[in-house]
Image (cartoon, rainbow, N blue to C red; front, top):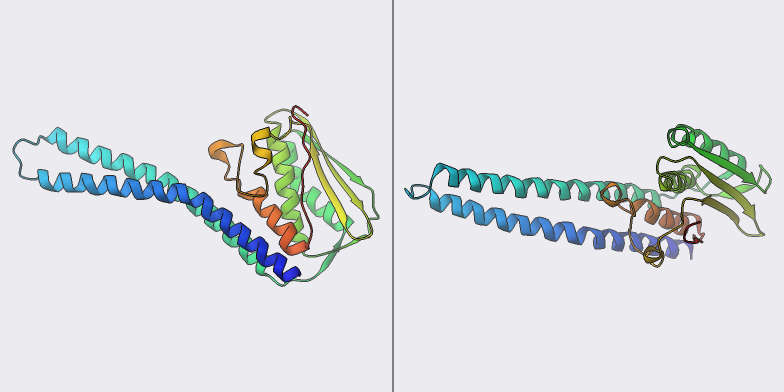
Length: 234
């Protein structure tokens, strides 16, 4: 069952990547057609006395514009593929281990210290379980998840000061980890898409891959689940 869940999460990750690469790939394909037409036009113009130097300069200028646009999309695709590659390797790893709640908090606080200072945010930890509570899985993987969630919370505040709560509870079977901010909530039009596809509210500064991979990690590597609660303006 764990293996099936891991494979399902991996398949979902790949499906999301494919969906997000469709637009840039089609755009680059269109740019290549445009550049091919310009190259043909340039070739046919050679030796034509009616074509001026300015005409040739216009053609080369337009070709460079298409190239620059292609580079932006190629850079985006490289970023997505590299991030996904690391996540896929991580999900395929057979590392089995455990760590304590105290180790998780210590590692997270050390990792986030500089970022919290940079964004002027406070991380309030509420440990409602024993420090010695043991969690099955790889420590670095869950720390990456918390790093992403806390970073998203900090960025949601912009350059304003803000509080972020990191809360740990437990029941008979699971440890429940919550990351809470008060930066305004998740926009309504995004709620239904979270965890189902790569989506971002950061415009060109985000790919939406981080949260998507967090979900894949929790499902595929910890046999857990991930959900959110949000109130507009809160």
